[in-house]
Amino acid sequence: MVATALIGCSGYAGQETLDRVLAHPELEVVALGSDSLAGEPPSALDLRLNGSLPPFVSNAEALASGADVLFLCLDHDEAAAFEPPAEAVVVDLSGAHRLRDPALYDDWYGFAHPFPAVLPDWSYALPELYPPTGRLIANPGCYATAALLALAPLAEAIEPEGIVVDAKSGVSGAGRALKASSHAGFVLENLSPYRIGSHQHAPEVEQALGFPICFVPHLLPIRRGLLATCYARAVDGGSRERLEDAYAESDVVRVLPEGVAPELGRVQGTDTAEVALFEDRSTRTTIVVCALDNLGKGAAGQAVQNANLALGLDETMGLRLTGVLV
Image (cartoon, rainbow, N blue to C red):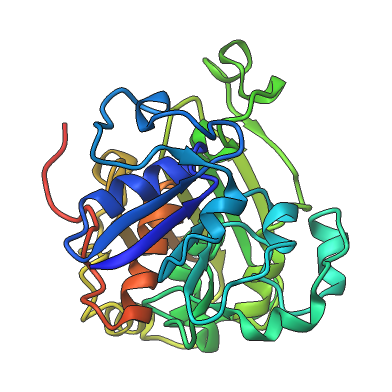
């Protein structure tokens, strides 16, 4: 069994990662880190967690637990200040190590990166497209995951100018911390764009694709799920074949049959993603749609998938991939 510690376990991403670790046949929890729950039993997070798990400790204690795998589920600035222990596989679910250019952190995340020299040591890993190459892994953002699954296989076959990504996500994407924009009175019966033209996932998409996108996220009045509709102009044919070839061997990403659209209902609560390709009849615009669960393939599921690859395990271990949910 691989000793595993979760740092910042009390947030949505931490709890979802813990859920997958508990279902994993090769990972064993040795430390649950949470500064807000330190000293409390696991049931303080969720009554369904029984006495077989260790009590919560501070994040510093969890970091020093000697675990072979660590999942960082911290705020961006907290994760940026993290110093990884030698030899351990570390998967960072925050944005603290996604961007190679340290100058971008002040522009997009609002803080100067405290350890810019170590950024090249972190592997930006979206398994189907960019598998992890080392033990330090930067997990992509949820919106970036959807946009890249849709666009990256087509990057050499579309015009690099004028690409638009219109994306919508459930309220859990904002995290567990209370804020006015996540109150029921604001979210329910409402649909609102936010961080228009300034969302922090845009530069990581540009970094991966090699060209910028116009990205507008929206808040859906649902708990979880994310759908990104991407508009581009193809320079040649074969877009469907490129997508199908990219994911032909994947157990996680499904390219849907022609004419079938992705749906949130089929991916919510899972670690799968659906991708579909369309062409606008009037303008010949290529439209690629990707649906995934922002806490699943967009966060915890992808983190466990990356850890599996770094450990040399079957990449689907612990993931939620099958079922016909209602």
